[in-house]
Every structure is written in C-alpha cells, then in structure tokens.
Length: 98
Length: 378
Image 1 (cartoon, each protein chain N blue to C red):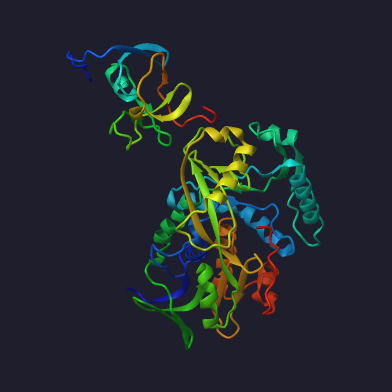
Image 2 (image 1 turned 90 degrees about the vertical axis):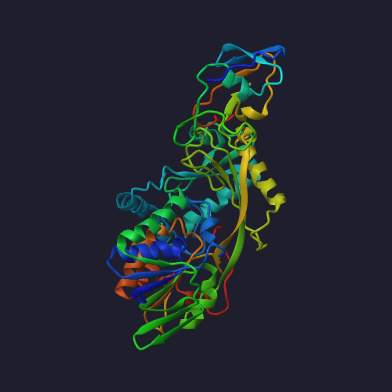
C-alpha cells in the first residue's frame, strides 16, 4: 500500500515483525515501519476483534497498538524503531505481565 | 406529557430503575422522575459486585436478604437478556477477600467466626483459605498474600449494562422516564399523590422514593424517615487485558471486557470532582501486592463518586403510615440488591404493603430517632 520515497537516504535499521526481519529506516516510528513493510500488520481490537491499522499517526487514535519487546499495548506511532527491535502484531487484549 | 400513573418512582438510578422495571413487569403504569446529567449519581460510583460475604454483621435479617438477592440474580440477568438482548455479564462463581500479612488474616478469621455465630443469620458458606489454597483458584497472587476468605455466593456483573438494560426495558414495558425533573414537593390530594417538578406536576396513586441520598429530604414530605448520607469512593481502571482473574475480589475485579477495576475506598470527603491521590496510591499499592503482574498495566482512568449510605449501613424500606401508598427504599448495595428490588420490592409496592417477614427488619423505626452506629461490613 505504501512505498518508500526514492529520495529517502536514511540508514537502514533491521527490526523483526512476528519474527520476520524487516528493513526500516532510522527515524521511522514503529507504525511507519510497519505500514512500509508491505506485510499484513492489522491488529485486532480488544472487544470486538475488528481489524485495525495505524490511523492518526500522532498518538491520538490508539489504533496502532502493538507489542514491542514483550510489552503490550504500546502506541507504535510514538515509538522510534531501534536495531533488533521485536514487534508482535497484537491480536485482541494485552496479556497480563507482558 | 402524560401525568397520571399507578406508581411514580422518584429516582432513576439503579435502585429506582430496578423497582420501576419490576413494577412495569407486573403491568403497572409507571413514571420515573429523574434529575439531569449533573446529578451526583451513586449508580456511577458502584463497584458492580453482587456480594454476600461479610455483610450483615449486627443485622441477621440482612444476611438473609442478601443471600436471597444473590440467588435471584440469575433470574434477573436472564429476564433482562430475554427482554432487551443485553448480556449483563453476570459471573457468580464465588468471590475472595484477600489479606496481606498475618494480622489481616487473623482479623478476617475473627470476622468469619463472628458472622458464623450470628443467631438467625443465613449461611454464607464463607470460609477462610490459606495462601496456598487461594493460589489454587488465583494462581497469580503475590508472596505477601497471607490467605483470604471465600464465599461461593459472591459474584459481579457489568453494572453499566445492567443500568442500560433496565432503561431499555422501560420502553418495552411502556414505562415513562422523565429526566430533568427533580421533585421539590409532594402532597396528597384525596387518593392521589401530586409531585411538583420544574416541568410540571405529575400524579400517581402510589409513590416510591428511590432518590439515593435525596431520600433524606423527600421522605419527611410524606411522613417517612430516611436517615442517610453520602460517602465518597474512588476507583482506578486499567487498560483491557486478557482474562487473568477468574474470581472477583472485594477490591479488584476484571470486567467482561478486560479492564481491571481497583477500588473501592470509603471517604468522608464529598467533592466528587477531585481525586485524592494518596487514597488511589494505597488502593493500587495493595492491588499490586496482591497481584504483582498488575504493576505492568497502564491505568486509563480513575474517578471519585458519591455513594449512598443509610446511617447504620443497612437498607431502609418503609411504607408511610400517615400517607398510605408512599414507600421509601434506601440502600448502599444497589447492584447486589437489584434482583430483590426488581422482584420483591416491586411486587410489594404493587400489592400495596411491605411484607414484614421479608423486610420488616429494615424499617427506619429501628433508629428510634437516635441513629445507630455503622456496623454493616462496608
């Protein structure tokens, strides 16, 4: 759905999405990297299970919730990527303790 | 606006709604007079427990009444579901009161003994469990938990959905709900009550005062007595989480939609627009010591609310001697007792007389005008 600009010369950062290596760029937020990954990054909501993608990209809509390095319900749009970051697409509610 | 009814219920909160719904169920024409959205609604400050254990110390009749309510809840939940399609998420698989440290365990053990020894009290089947016994039911408890009491009759519901179900049920029963109509005066004219509201007068053959703390001022208008007053409670709510808590606790429960509710304090301060963080801090600290995993969850909301408290903590149900047909109903546990209000109190109001064998102990005559100490277990 999204394509990276050819003018974007920022260095690559490798992250993992559900265990699969994905090339992000330095300065990407997790949500931006997920949208650019061309993978299916739809989470499902906690109550109805409806599928969601990152929407507002500015910390307001909470539709980008994702598990980052073992911590659930993080707002992907507010977290910059880091080398080796482990991201899990969250299905439903966060688990207690992670 | 129609202005003549069989019964006018003053108060559209959980208590008034349950009685009104019960009257509608019996085919009565009912009007519910409510305040507006800025009213200090106790129905918003509840913790949604259908709770039996530890209630009724000092009044054995209240243990009987509470156990009856617990048993009748399944029927209420199922009738509401059938009528409105709304699932109130009743869970009644027993509840715990956990203790931290040996002192608390000792105090709780003492309380369980005193409850058991009360003459004329219903059998709560409440018993003390050691920490290792508790762990079998609640595997995630922390090392500071010394044990706790368990009662198989305890449970909880989604109280907001219960409230909504009653109001949805109003429509099906043809009950008229009138918001923005606080009652300022009540008079009796022949066989009929006249209630004065800012939007006109309403008439009814019978009235039920179910206005929470406002009953204190309404009751004397029809020769009744309702000594009660507000207390404040605070609740902290976390983000939604996968189910981890299979039983409700007195102070922690997980809703059907996954949030964890932590409560509930009892304070003398009455400003419901501000939170006292020193109190939330104690509540959340205790919750984390009971379940260390909670410390990783985000808190999404906390609030303070005003709750209803009869002077000695026990319910008050009375019919006026000077104004026959005028009833008053006051209680703290509007959720737990909703089933009794819907089925029993509504039936008695419809019949025109309270039944002494069921609710005689709850007459305000017990106060003898002098009041009584609060020994209710809240």
